[in-house]
Length: 632
Image 1: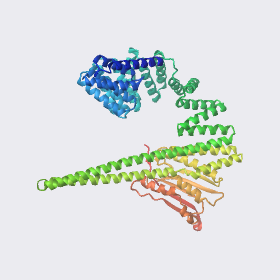
Image 2: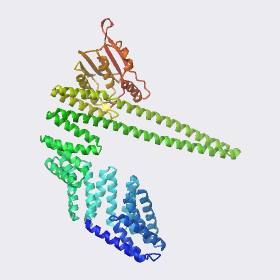
Image 3: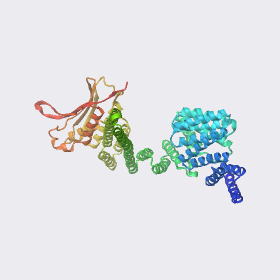
């Protein structure tokens, strides 16, 4: 097929030179020569776009010289398609709109649907999906009016592709299925395969893998019907995913192995990486750790190359787990460090992306505000000029307009202040989330793992590593949510305090309790509000206790409000007075965050000594109200 296209392109190039060699002495081309050139342009758009663009440009000029409408229309249409293929979408839209207007003016009704489909494709690729959908529907109607069933199918398939791009799988299935019925009758197997692929992908998105499996096979049959002999990488990859989802594990392994082999042959690293990761997981489950490690390491190289932080976290965690099971603690420690580093990068990237988006939004609003302000000022100046010229006649009207402009300006000013306040609140939230996991805590934890390994405390090291990995995962997941259940908060706090006990040589015990009547599954509260106060109780309250420390965390309700309380049996506030300068920044930010979440309601954080007989200080209690939502 490729050899045929190359030969065809060569023949077209020779014919082009021959025609222009014979016609170079003429001032214009006749209509027969223009028609021949149009055919050459159409045949060359894909296989030799540079040649096609040059020939179409020359032929368009020649058609304009003799005012030949068909030549003007067809070459404008071709130049639009070439611009689309070159990524010049604005130019493609302009050329196709010109061709559409010109074709309608000259009665080229039989080509109107083709132009509309091209124009819809331009807008879809340019991000205007709503306009693309409307134009595709118009293209379908025009093709139906002239009974051009093939063009109906092409337009329907275009509709399906747009819906697929914006995440509407049901609509994709509907339109691509209608198109496929026509392509089958017309024996258009290349476009039929494309429709089947979109249908299969949509069923996979809907988790209907039985249906997806069927359409993947139909796609292969359509591909085979074209006479092509090159193996299909997408077929093996899609079959592997479907088989795995249908619990056909042996078949999934087979197709992933075929994907891996073919991806290596064609150097497709994007397909190779998931195949390696899947096969590594299966080899690990089968106990083939050597092969699993080989696949994991190769997959890790690709995920690092693609800067896929989530993939890097998963693979390094798997490698650390395998090495720990094999008692190769040096490598287990190495990959645990890498996993922690990737997690930190991931968290930072999430925050950077969020802050960048906020900044972009804020800058856009600032520009709009400046534009509105300038517009208002210009309008005000114009109204003053009118008022000066027509003071007696239009004085009242001028005053009313001036007042209206001032009101608009004041309203916009208040709105802008509200936007700035909202942005500050969002930035405050980002600052808090960035402080939730203390970098010192991460590195102290890693050092503790290293100490346990060097002390040959293998089981403690594995236990600590498991808890530490679970905690970082919980914090990562919770920091992305505005509200989490009280049950999730309790699980995270319990895991956090267990790790703190390991860090502090088990010098304290802890207890978490909730009052009766509180439903932890349906109480939703902002994530990680309480952790900084528990950290203060451990770090400062129990600072001088070598053993026997007690931390008690309690959630209780009072007057239909939810309260948090943490107590310790440490030295009390008097003994810690000299540490005021070291008070945790995260607790101060948490206080600001509480006030932000609770809107105008004032939230008070109470901290006081616990006293016993003879007013002896027995510890410190901190408590405050937590804003919450009840998930009914």
